[in-house]
Image (tube, rainbow, N blue to C red; front, side, top):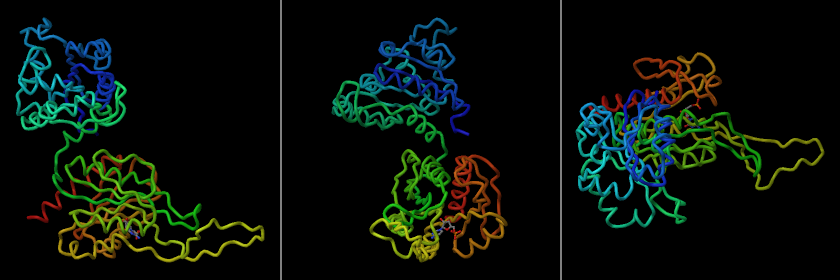
Amino acid sequence: MSTLAGKHIVLGLSGGIAAYKSAELCRALVKAGVTVQVVMTEAAEHFMTAVTLQALSGRPVYTSQWDAREGNNMAHINLSREADAIVVAPASADFMAKLLHGRADDLLSLMCLARPIDQVPLIVAPAMNREMWANPATQRNVAQLRVDGVHMLDVGQGDQACGETGDGRMLEADEILEDLEAFFTPKVLAGRQLLVTAGPTYEAIDPVRGITNLSSGKMGFAIARAAHMAGAHVTLVAGPVSLPTPRGVRRVDVRSARDMLQAVEQNVGAAQVFISTAAVADWRPATSADQKIKKDGSGQTPQLGFVENPDILATVAKSPRAQAGELFCVGFAAESHDLLAHATAKRERKGVPLLVGNIGPATFGQDDNALLLVDAQGARELPHASKQVLATQLIEDIARRLGALKA
Ligand code: C5P
C-alpha cells in the first residue's frame, strides 16, 4: 500500500503551463488514497479551470482568501491546519519569490505562510522557462527556501512549451507522486549505501544467440525502490531487463555474469548492504563465437561445452569487509520445493547472514511473491503480497538488523 494512502494534501497551483500536469497529479493522488484539496492562484486559473480540478479531486476548489464558504472566513487557517502537507505544483518563479519574502496577498501564499511550520511540510515543484530557472535570483530563492525548511523537488530537463530546451520543466505527475511517496516513507536506511543485483544474466553463444533465464528483475527493482524511499543511496546492477529505473536509483546495466561481477566489484566498496537478487547463470558456453554459427544443412549440431560462472554473492561474502561485519550480505534462493531446507543449506554454503527463499516457478515474472527469511536463528515468513510490499518489509527487516549490528 502507498505511504500516501489516508493522507490529506493541499495541492496548490500557481500560474504556469505545467498546470496541465497537475490535473494528472491530482487524479493520481486520489487514486493513491489521498484526499486532495485544490487551491489555485488567479494566474493558475488562466491555465486550468477550477471545474477540472474540482471534478478530479471531488471537492470544491478554493481560489480566494475572501471565500465566504468558510464559517469564520479564514480559509487560509482552516485549510492549512487539516493538511498533512501542502504541495505547490506548479510553483512559478514569481510564486517562489513570494514564498521567500513571506508575502501573502493571495490564498495560496497566505496559506503557506500561515501553516504550522513544524507540522505541515511545504513541498514545492518548480516550473518555468530555462532562463528563468537559471537566473541568479531564482537560484538564490531556491537555496534560501531550502534553508527555510521548504522541501524543494527537482526540475525536469528537456523541451519546454516556449520552444526552448533546458532545465526548468515541472516533473511529470508520476515523478512527483513517487517523490511524495518517498517523502512520507520513514527513513530507516538514511544515508546508507546499498548495492543490489537484479534480473537474469545473458551468456552469449554467438553474436545473435545466448543462454538466459526467466527472471524478470521485478523483485530486485522493487527492493532498490524501497531502499531509495527509505533514504538509502542505491546502486542497482541490472541484467538485461526492460524495467524502468526506479526514481533516484543509480543503475548499471550489464549482460553476462562476468560483467555483473565486475560491476559489483567496482561498486561494492562504498556499500554497507549488498542484496543479491539476480538470477545469475550458473554456466556459460566455454567459447563464444565472434560470428553467427551457421546451419550448414548437414544436420550437424554445434557442440556446446560449458564452464561455471563466478559466484558473485559468495565472492562478495568472503571479502574482508563482509567478514568484518562492515558489509551486510543478503542472498536469494529460488527453489521449486523444500524451501526451508534448501534455503538453510544455501545460507551456510554462501556464507551470508540472511538468505531470502522464494518458490522460483511461482514468482518469475509475477507481481506477487511470498518470502522466507532465513538467518542463523531460524526462519520468518513474509506472507503472500505484492513484490513492492515485500520489498518494503525486507528493507525494514534489514534496517533492524543493521541497528542491531551497530549496537
Ligand atoms: O546458487 P544459487 O544460484 O541458487 O544462489 C542464489 C543466490 O546466489 C542469489 O542471491 C544469487 O543472486 C546469487 N548468485 C550469484 N552468482 C552466481 C549464482 C548465484 O551471486 N553465479
